Amino acid sequence: MKMPKAASTHHGVAMLLLVTIFILLSSCEAQDSETSIISCNEVISEAAPCASFLEEDRTEKPSQSCCDGVKKLSDDAGTQEDRTAICECLKQVLAKIKYDPKRVAMLPKLCQVSLTIPPIDQKTDCSK
Image (tube, rainbow, N blue to C red; front, top):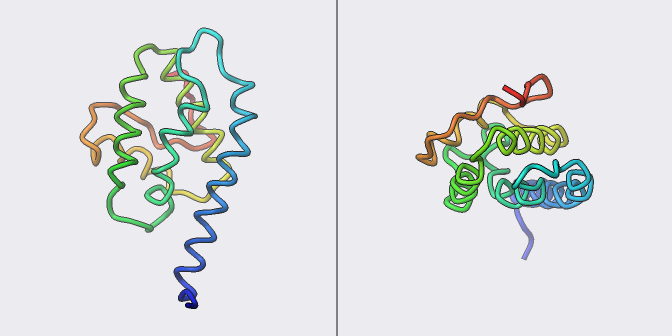
């Protein structure tokens, strides 16, 4: 059975995104801070289900698995070092895909998590 062109294109984009995320695992792991509890691998694992939401105009709301990941990251963001590590990792990964930075900031509210996430782009200062 032949897939419609739009479905085939979406599937191809999703597969490319997953491959990119896994390739980035090794580069993020080398940059993890020894004082940080959360690793870039953990951040990528929890944030990966949010990819389809972060892509511009893909979906109106994040999936449950995305929200579960956001909640886990919120729980893991106990220290400033952890929050900075999460932000830096997301900044690295998001630089490799086409996304809307404003949608990153929407995730906590849509997932009912009390966490402030800036619209992450390459200019974001993760130390603040």
